[in-house]
Figure 1 (spheres, one colour):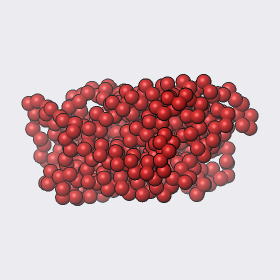
Figure 2: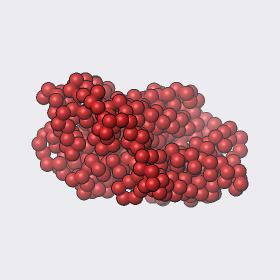
Figure 3: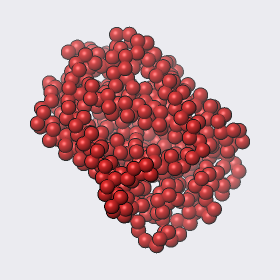
Figure 4: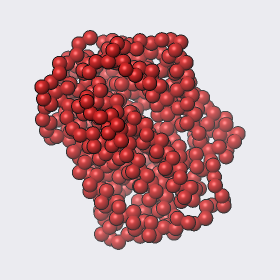
Length: 478
């Protein structure tokens, strides 16, 4: 196997230069940045109304009181942020994107399954969800038609994502400062108008409502997990892993918990209308604060979606797509943006319930994937994976696909609680709510551990601190 040579000094990046290439490993002479930039990277995309609306769902749709909803938010956000921090620490060692690293657990061809799922749900699904929230805010602020607002939001997103990694990081950093300040002011007004001690509908604790809400929160937070290493792979290989994980996890947890709690509080305001959540969220604010909040919601949607289509493009390429252009990542990102725009335009009418279902579906596939990749990484501790993830190696590991599929089938078949499909246990015991995510993670983890021991896939040699060559199916054109 061929490795890059160690550099004398890292290159000086320019954030306005278009990032070329695709998913190839970042060589040591291009590594740069501070791990604490990840705090902003994972704060800014959550400072938006899609995050707020998760808290709204917990109260308005799942029937929880504020304090019950807050508990569900903390539990779900803590779980998703913990895995986010852990996965982010994997980026600096090999300089590889998250769904490329997933190849060790699934094999080169087997990885097409989770990479394709992430492509569709991240590059298209999440893009549509966040574009809608931004369009609602811009339309409310300006009075323009929602389709026109959607066009403007999408156009800005595409420009940022097209330029690439360093520009995305810079955008997220400055967005965090601005959005953080605005949302803190907005949240003060929301809590001042809320009635967080209002008795729960039905009079007591709802375990079903709690698991549904915690599952939705986990689905939102863990939905970022398949992107984690995409934004840490440029960091120097010697960067302290604990700092990387802490910065990413803390940025995720603080932003999600704060805004989801605000959403839950907003749902207790007298006259709150979940069918018009943006208007209701800002209704009690002074005009100036309301205007700034709507601007922040629109900018937050842009901050989230630049990551969605950037990482969606990375997942598409990780599935093995060979695009013979130096700007293949940028081209794919724009293509997904156009598709996501069309989908967003088609679901503007019933965004609330579509979002509720989407959040749970995200957790359904991410949790089994997490179970597989976490156990795989543990079993490979201290080994070099570079030779296993290259495009030419065509490394096989049936254990990952088996465990992933079993985890999906068992968890969804028994515990899914959706309008379209309800699992056997959820149907028989409606008070259980939705335990699909935790069941999927545990089942897939156990099955993978057993299958790995039985099938004995290649482990790799001793750990080498260098970036592997030949990871991208089109490395020769970079």
